[in-house]
Length: 286
Image (cartoon, rainbow, N blue to C red; front, side, top):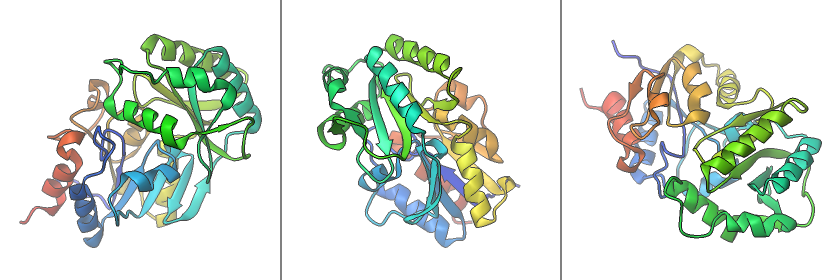
């Protein structure tokens, strides 16, 4: 008998989001049907909570959302749990990012993401055309939009609660050097890093990831890990995929992700892979 979960956790970028950073109406409809049939459906994303509304169809609803790679969890607009990067870590990381000329976005809770004005020139230079061939279109479009509309350029750090850092480099060599810098810094300050493409890295509180966020969400809904399925596509999904009872990788996922899962979707994120997978597995007429 095929495994039938009570709870389904879905990644966003490269999973329910296509490479134009859109969630299709078909995916929304499938999620609605699953929830109507008694399934719990959750989002588990690296994106911050405030980013989500702008990239999903009108009326899009799930039972809960794990955001910023496990840093916060929401049921509706209610905060279920929240971790925050300490200010001394934020200040030290920005100083080192400046020394290495690494593009960064800092995400305060409930406010626009921020980058310091003194770093604006080199940050913007990372997003100059043409797009490097190895950078995914979805990531490139997100960075272009962030530069144009979403980053608040400030003189000083704003706020005292931060969900994550996002770092990007147009070359793999540059971001890999920065990852090495972060590993060195971990010897002085404890924190967690997460990667969702070959051109980025994110920083969260120590020992926090999608799996820890999912565990807190399951506890709230009185659900067991044995009742869970998850679908994802990249390295930041690995803790989630290893945690759940049944793990699924997208067709467009890296081979290293496909090697550790129970199943792979027939279609990619640009072909409504999640919609087709969930519909055929759980909603097909008998």
